[in-house]
Length: 405
Image (cartoon, rainbow, N blue to C red; front, side, top):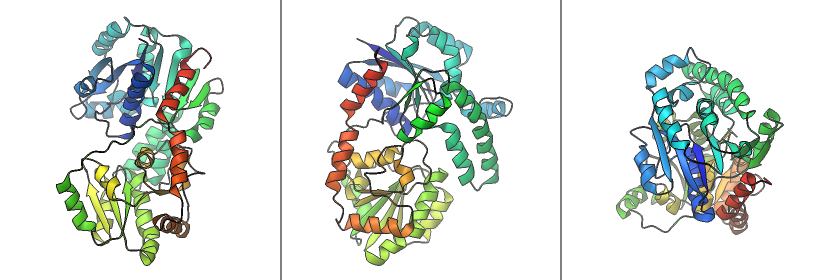
């Protein structure tokens, strides 16, 4: 059986909880199920994301794990290094490096994938020890990180964080570009970032491979938990949902924009509530909810499924175009109606398919039209299903690693 090697510079959760983990885990899951290709993975672990969980998933043939470096030691070291804090925190020490080299050197791999810019230190240490053809070494871009950090620097109001993010942005601007130029094959999960990657490395072949997510399976929701949610929102005809990491500035800024600029227009026309769901809400989100009786916060929920079940509309009003928005893909997989800002759709290639707007009045009108069934979403779901068919995505990946890719 053919086998690929994945080099992941950050821990991968199982079950996959965050966007990065979803991309990495389900890529191997569908390669195994559709193409009978096994995956080995090199990955750091911590208490929150133990490697044993990945082993127990049955998806990976071998999980070569190693412990992360100390948080504060890595942070201090980053102040005097060309590399970023994340790179240093997740780097291999010599003992763990030698152990992993012994294990991977026994195998010949059909392809090797280096995930995202944080894998650069691992690339430098491992590349000479991996038995794989040069044109089967692939850089997998989850987003263009230096552009993402540039945007986050602009968005952040906290001065200390702004300085910290700016330093990371300037480091990555050089490191990431130099790293990308080392590859002859590059995959981007974000469609609109292909041209940027081609400009950075004109000699490489650059491909778009969208994330693969499983089709939702009918599961019985926790009735007690559903009842608690329902008690809060029972008096509203329409339930509007926003989901995301609520400590990330690009997410909470967007949720606040919708709440303050768009939602009041909708409320004048419809009996609707706004549900904000996600982990670690910022103080800005908490304050927003405290001052609005029709906005409800559900932090650190065990599952998104109940919220997809009860919501009538999912909004993705993100300003930051970096990467691809997994919550957008997840919502459409659940056959939810979505309205977004165009920036949120670029990475997914859905800007001409999903209803979108930039101005509050236009955004609100799109939401009202969707809620009142004035937009035929069956056509939108059909087009989405064609673009995000997991078996076809795997076939495209196999073409890339084949001799004629």
